[in-house]
Length: 511
Image (cartoon, rainbow, N blue to C red):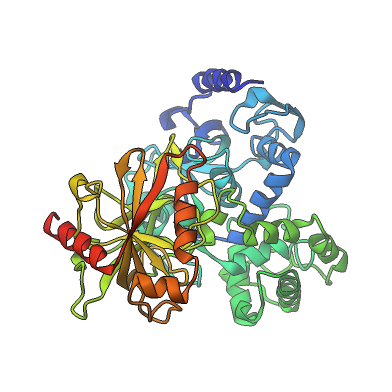
C-alpha cells in the first residue's frame, strides 16, 4: 500500500470517527477520541512498563496491532498488511467490532466542563502516544465509566472524583499533591517516574495478580506498602541480573504482607491479588530472552532513536521543567546571563549534549525555553553520528550576516565531557571554525569547558592542535558531513582565539 493510499485511508477514517461531544454521551457509552483529548488523573507512571511496550512494539508488530485492537474492545488482531499503520484502521483487521469487549477497554469520566478524564490506561495510552507512529492525534476508543457533567463546577467534580477513588493525588515518592499538579495531557515527560509502580507491573504473576474486580489505582496502593519494605536504590535497574533481584525482592515483600488495609485501600492483601506463594515459573517467563524484561532493558538502554531513547537517555538541567515533549522551560530568561562573566569566562547554553542526535535550540519566541526543532512537521533528528561535542549558544549575542552570522545568538561548539541540556557552563574561546552552509557564512565558535574537563587547560587553537591531534579535523569532517553528501556545507578555514573574541565582541554589540 502506498503512502498516498494510507493517507487517503486516514482521511476517510478521520471523517467518520469523530469524537462524540460530552453532552451526547452517557455512562457505558463507547467514545472515539484522540489522545490529546484525554486528561490524566494520576501524576506518575512506571516508565519501565511503558518502555517494555515500546521495546516490544519495535520488534513485534503483531503485538502492537493486537494491543490496539484490545484497547478498542476488539479482542485481538487477525491480520495486518506489511505497510499497516496503527492510526489507520483500514490497514489491519481485528477479531470483533469496536466495543465488543468493554471489559478490556480503558475508561474515562466526563467532567462538568465537558472534558474527558482518563481513569484507566495511562500506561497503554502513553505507549501509544510515545511510539513512532503515535502522538497526540492518535485515535482510540474508550468507555464512559461515569458522567459527572451534571455537577455544578470543577470543584465539586474533584470532590466527587476523590470520594469515588477516581483520582490519585500522590506523587512518585508518595507525597501528597493537589489536582492542579496533575499532568495536563498524556506524554511520558509530563509524568514523574514511579519506579515502584514499574516493579508492580513486572512482579505480576510472580507475587500477585490483579483480582477479577480491581480497585482503581490498585498498583499504587501496593506501592505505599512497598516503599516501607524495599529500597530500589539497592538494585541496578539497567541490568538483567539487577532487575531480576528487584522483582524477587518486590514479590517477596508482597508475599510477606498481612494486612486488611493495603495502602489505606480498606482491602486485604488477598482482595488486592496477593498469591499464596512465590511463582518461580512466572519469574522465569519474565526473564527469558524475548520476555518482558528483555524488551524493556533493550529499549531502555538502547540508542536506537525510536521515541524515548532520544529523550530519556539525555539528562536535562535540574532547574528545567518539561512543558511538553518538545519544550523545556527555565524559571528565568537565559538572557539574564551575561555573555562574559566577571572572571572572563564565556557563558554557554548547552542545547545539544555531546553524543546525542536530537536537534534542540534556544527558542526565538521565548528566551527562557529550549525547544526541539521541527523539520517536515516532526522533531528533527540528525541522521548521522551523534554530535562530537556539546553544542549551544552564547546569551545576549546576535551576529548579523555581514559579520559571518545568521542574526541568531552565536553558535558555540564546547569541547569536553557531555553536559546536560539546558545547563549554562563556563567556556574559554580558543578558535572559530569558518563554515559555509548553503552558500551563507555560518561560523562556529570553538570553546573548551574550564571546569574539570580534559580540555580545561587549552588556551589556543595552536595548543589544541598540538596536544589533541586531529580534533579540528574531526569537527570539520562531522560538520561538513552530517547533512549528507549534498548537504551544502563546507569548512573554509579556521581562525584563532583572537578571531573568536572579535566575533564575540561584534555579536555583543549587535544584541
